Image (tube, rainbow, N blue to C red; front, side, top):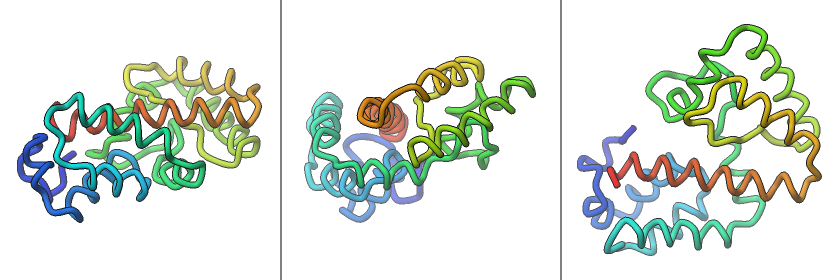
Length: 169
């Protein structure tokens, strides 16, 4: 999913893009303005590993409000999402799950949101609907601090996956 801002989805094109274009592209990977601004300001990146190191470093500096801002851009696991976006492909395991699993995911999402106040986030790529459901149910037992740490890790995984696809790393 590359927007018209970066005609070439490469690290070289990203490095020379206008700051607002780079930030807009980064927001498709992680919808935190602090994240997008910090990574865009850190350009140029000589190699993919340098960019990935920068992403890791920036994630350590994000506060919970920054993480929550990004969570607001993520659909619920199992919800129907528009085709062509990142989430549709990432959640394909939930979309192909049977009715029982989809219903349990819907119920689990609501229980999770009541407990933690935000959408359940998991790096869903490669997971079946049942895998996602099992992890959702297990995470419902966490305390807030533990769950926030896991959410940060999952968001980092998603961000790196999307960035890798965006820039053909």
